[in-house]
Length: 611
Image (cartoon, rainbow, N blue to C red; front, side, top):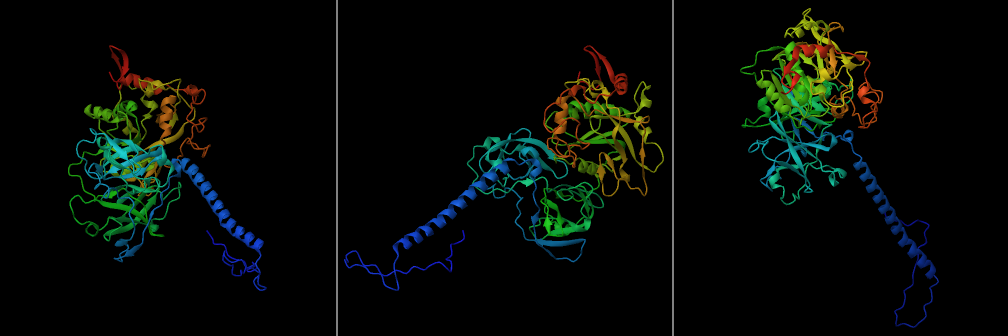
């Protein structure tokens, strides 16, 4: 508070010495030091009122600011989450611009629980990331004692609040065990910063409060979340750098950072490509960044050279190693990102396997249904289905880029189609049986073809009010008249170095390969997009595409990614069962009945129905 200063024009009061109480002599003001009692009281009261008034104003502003902050925090949504990169200062040790060590002086806010584990043996060293809808992703890098599926785990916060932790699985590329819990809906959501929890077994949840400072929850909107090493380089997956579609930061403005950037053994290498959330850079000199200790984990991150800032990271570097006994290379594979699709998966896998897909690679976005058991059943029946835990929200394009490098040595062609999409050709209608050569026939042509695009027909609810137990190909038979967008089957070696992709098709190396667009008489994809309301709202609550906004936000109301007539609330539009029905189309329905229909004691069933 600014002290009150005397004005130059303010009168200076001068007082004569007052006699003691025992003195009876009458006091007479001196001619030069006249005492005005009224003036004295007025000045005294003025001086007392000034700080009191200022204090009152200050307290009022403080209360108003606190109330406003409470309201703003209470209104936080997942789109507000933005975690800025950590500030660092770098000092070059090696002048080599491609691989030189840097010295960083920074307080690392993201390594968790080394100071916590000394309090209770039951606390587990972990790091946590705040996801949309108040979900907290907890990653454990050290091996857990016992079977994580057999124990109950709890997220314990510094306030001693708890929430149940659900085991998601093991991250396949960095061997991190993943759990998911909720940030408790109380004071924790209304105060900043949001603290990271520690993971503990539920049987130990009655421990005393931690009473120690906790690191801030890492925000998922600015984060290095995955990395993958190829023989020639390292592919890094990063949120928060290229945030607008079609606008990418120049590789020259970035560096990959290997190692603990709080220590002296960090190494950085040049970035060679920057597109969407995918960045490619050179391998580091491993001897410069690794101590050679058994089980050592090398952190990898991304530096913005303009202001020497390093993006927070939960990813680790793993040098490339050639597989000793690789599987025979499949001609055609199929991939997609999935969430709670157990009820659809058998139909999708069995159908596409019969027409030529040899291997299926699913990027699991954190499913909590029976997906794992369905996949196990399919593999036991002879199908080749692989699931990779990919918990990162709104990263569909990044996941497609990832599989393009991950599967390049095991798949020749990759079909990028979702589990509600079925490839179909009108020329197959007279076939009594499917053939594993049908898809291959769509890819035949000149050797220079690197990508085949197939248009989509979008089907509506077709009067269904719940998931049809006989399958989507049987339950939905009414669609829009005009085809919508397209999906692609891509030759993996033809994909452009940047790995850039949009709406299920890639940029390809146009110097060597061409794109081929199939006509509707050649092939079409039946996209069972607008299903029964109970199924549709679950799907569209978790839109996985990077640049598609949440359907509940009042943004881009005319976007083609929005469902016509849906609005912004999770309320079934009037007449939903009959919407998007302009053409009755039962061609694939009748074809699959012929190919997969069975007679059982309980009546006619489809091959993918559980009997």
